Amino acid sequence: MSLRLTSAAAGLTLLLAVALLPGLVQAQAPEPHQAIQEYNGPATCEMCHGNVTDEVIHSIHYTWEGKMEHYSPVAGSIADINWLGMLNEKLDIPGGCGRCHVGSGALPKPADEVTAEDRAGIDCLICHSPVYDTSLRFPVQDESGAWALTQDRTLLTARQAQRPTTENCLLCHQNVGGGPMLKRGVDFAPVEDKHGEASKADVHADAGITCVDCHASQNHKISGFAPDLWSRDLPDQRLTCDSCHTSAPHTNPLLNDQHVRLDCRTCHVQGTGGLVERDWTAEPTYDPVTELYAPVDDVRDPNSVQPIYLWHNGQPALPDEPWPGSRSDLASRIQPFKLFQATAPVDASSEQPIPLKLGLFYTQGDLEQAIAVGADESGMDYSGAWQPKELTLPLQISHGVVGKQDARACQDCHVQDGIMDFASLGYTPQEVAVLTSISAESAGQRQPLQMSVVIPAAQPLPTPVLLSGNLEATRGFGIRIPWNLFLVLLVSALILGGGVYWLYRQKPATPSPAMAASTEAPPTAADEAVPAAGQGMVVDQPSRPGNEPSTDRTSSGSSETET
Image 1: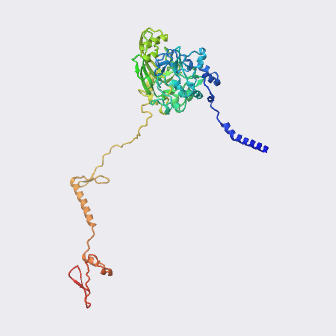
Image 2: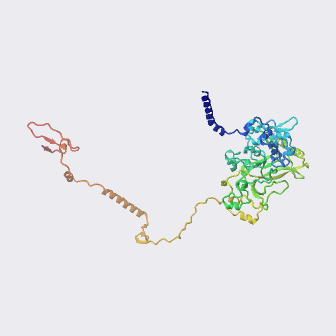
Image 3: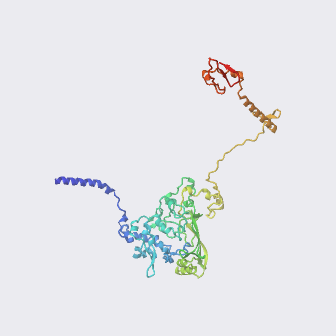
């Protein structure tokens, strides 16, 4: 009995194993980060990702090499003296360049000077978690007066860590210059999720491509090229469209062979916008909502401003250095740029731009004090007097790319008064004459149907032949009648008379009395019994004694008929 039970239990166990094993094998393993029970910053990441913190502190995103002391006319200052703080503590409005640094608020240092505290303060999740709560990343000041940045290190945020998304990158790169799309004036978003009503979607974002698909990383060093990108992780790797689309992306050989020095963005980026002018020397504007001052700005809708076109060889544009690119430089291509113009204070003696202390400018609107404190803290050799100066900065445009159906056509550039200034690009007057006459403004537009119709020469009319009276006829068919009022009345009378005669002929003839009597049918017995209507009434007289014949009197007359 026990043997039977044992065998039955073994069989049941085997059946359960067979039934459940495929499900166990096919079950998906939990996401790696779901196993995190407590997040302690980079120390938690390094448990699986090795010495990842060391990679970060050697990248431009941490060191900001070349950025800290570099003057930008967009910001009107340098980052080193405007790092972190509060612009309005009552309204919780933070300020400072350090809000977009991956550290915990301390000024960046060279990699060999980074302390253990600096390493522990690196904010990995600001780039790697799509659910990062930026409201938890806020400047705070300790008792010593030093500023630090709090971070979102919640368990939910840590468990969602992944490859950086586009929105992670845009947390910082979208708002450069003081607002969305102000600096570049173009958007990087799919058509259904644009960041502004006037902005154009980017075909790459619309196809699901993210920032890091093109700006690929090597050990946390990001590729990127622009004349205003003064710091580069991978300076020897020029990021171009050829990386994905090859050097011959078109099916039309003319576009591939004759435009080898034309950057793809020249035709596929149609416009720019955002901040086009900024005047730091004018009377600042005051916002009663934020209780802050601001420079006088000229802001346009995205994609509403025509770009300028320059030769560029991919190298950074450095102060007091020639522009990196020319027609004679075979590494250069024609690219679109947004021309930003600023009016900023410069030293009256050296004409060097004066870095402003932005906190004083935004909170008090005091330009003189912002100049004096900024010049002192930056270590500038300031003469004590300043003057306004117009500064221009070409900003590279790489996003807001449209598809081939919306790209530039030949007639946009190769016509008189086209969008391309060939003379400023180094072409001779003879070359300009050729380049501006290749196409026409109507090129590519459907024209109305045109036919070649041959009209024969006019021939004299044939001479009419006189027949009789006033009637004339030409050789051929038809009669030509010289109409007048009398002739019209005559013809009308003839037509009317003919009509009346025809109607008269259609009336039936009236029969004679003899013919009517001869054609009348003999009376029948029924007719004798019931007289016909219209022949009078027959009055029956009572029979007379002695069989005397009766006499009938009809209504047709006084005559009597004996029966």
